[in-house]
Every structure is written in C-alpha cells, then in structure tokens.
Image (cartoon, rainbow, N blue to C red):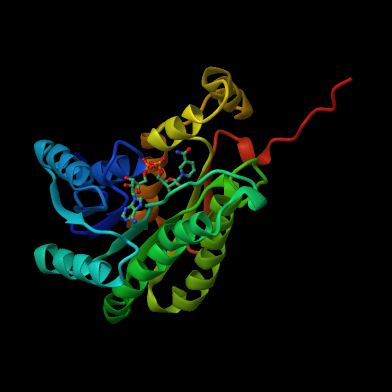
Length: 262
Ligand SMILES: NC(=O)c1ccc[n+]([C@@H]2O[C@H](COP(=O)([O-])OP(=O)(O)OC[C@H]3O[C@@H](n4cnc5c(N)ncnc54)[C@H](O)[C@@H]3O)[C@@H](O)[C@H]2O)c1
C-alpha cells in the first residue's frame, strides 16, 4: 500500500461488479483513500467493500439507483457522515444499449442519458457546494473513445460520452478558480462485463473479440487496472495543474490512421 491518496475521501459510482469501477475503488483504497462504493447492485457493492476491507482499506457500501435524486443525496450525506467531506468523485456508472440511431427506442435513449449523464449531474451537484466551501476537489467523469470517434452500433451511448467530455470542459472552466478540478478519461475497449455482454449479442463473439484486439494499435484490449492507474493520478495532488483534460487510455486507438489498401 502506498499513500498517494492518503487522507482523501472518494466516491466511486458503478463500483459494484468486476468492471472498471471496482478496480478504481480498490486502487483508491490501496492508495489510502476512504472510498464510498456506490452501485445499484447490493450484492456486488458488498463484494467490492469486502475486497477493500480484506486488503486493509476503508470503504462504505452505498446501494443507490443514480436515477433517483433523493437516493443520490442520501448516499453523499452518508459518505460525508462516515468519513468526512468528499475530495474526489468518479462518475463511472453507465449503461450501454446497442443500436444505430433509428434502431434505438425512446426508452433506451432516455435510460442511457438518465444514468450516464443525468446521474453524473446529480452526483456532482451534491458534492460541489462542500468542495466550493473547502476550496478543493477533483471530479472525474468516465467518458469513452466512443465520445470522440464514430464507432458503429452504439449511437445513444456514444452521445452520452460526448456529453460528458463537453461537461468536463464546461465544469472545469466554471470551477477552476475555486480549486475544483474536473477531468474525463476516455478508455478504448476494456475487458469487463460490459464488453462481454456486448460480445454475447454479436453473431460471432470470438471473431468480434479478435477484431477488438486488433483494432487497438497495442494489439489487445485494455484491463480495468490500466484505466484505474490514470484515475489515481487525476484524483491525487500530483495532477494539481490538470483540469479540463480528457485522458485517452486506449492503446493508441484514437490517434491511429489507416493505411490505404491496394
Ligand atoms: N468496458 C469498456 O470497454 C469501456 C470502454 C470505455 C468506457 N467504459 C466506461 O467505463 C465505465 C465502467 O464500465 P464497465 O465496463 O466496468 O461496465 P460495467 O457494466 O461492469 O459497470 C457499470 C456499473 O454501473 C452500474 N450501474 C448501472 N446503472 C446504474 C444505476 N442506475 N445506478 C447505480 N449504478 C448503476 C452497474 O451496476 C455496473 O456495476 C462506464 O462508464 C463505461 O461506459 C467502458
């Protein structure tokens, strides 16, 4: 255990399941932060908290549906009461319906914005007043390369990730003078349940998986811990002059050009 986040209180949404959120929560705790583990799935929240405590860290289970403003308010209050004012927020929770725009139902469109964008808004607005009072804070939105590039078949999800990149820029400008830094992270494809669910719906999952690996110049998809590492930096005081940034963690995907084929 090192101490890059010693003394900090962090809230990580979507930190249930064995995806990126849990990896971030575990890394934060290992770096000395007290972590609020927020997710809609009670059993998975309990598992993340168990893993953190087993490793000697501090965590609080927050079972919460981010679509519910009162539940979000209660979770933020509980975390503050248990560990003190919140220094770091990671808006990581998301859902990912697939489909091109005309294939996306109105229900799916509203549902993906309700979690991915409105959820980030609800959490952020609850913590910002106390960050303003204390003159410090780090908010990190989980975006995606899909918010920067056109990737096929996930139109509504991609729009939410572009919204989070825009929100990062707006918020960082509004709050920079008050000590609150706001950044986003845009991963390429990462090996998590979200990827497995997506592959399971494809005609040839094994072939699609190979395509995902090959799509990244590094030659493979990423791992949750490789994303979590960047969050540790952005949460820590090491990134004290970094705000308004969108960090890609994508094995080179977003800067790759294509060679013409003959
Ligand atoms: N896996 C990838 O390839 C990839 C790539 C780029 C970006 N991302 C982003 O990284 C983040 C984590 O993705 P992941 O792959 O670990 O996915 P995941 O599905 O494992 O994690 C998402 C978490 O959000 C939670 N959640 C969903 N709706 C919620 C709600 N209403 N209230 C509270 N919690 C809710 C889920 O229970 C789940 O634990 C997401 O923002 C995703 O968009 C993932």
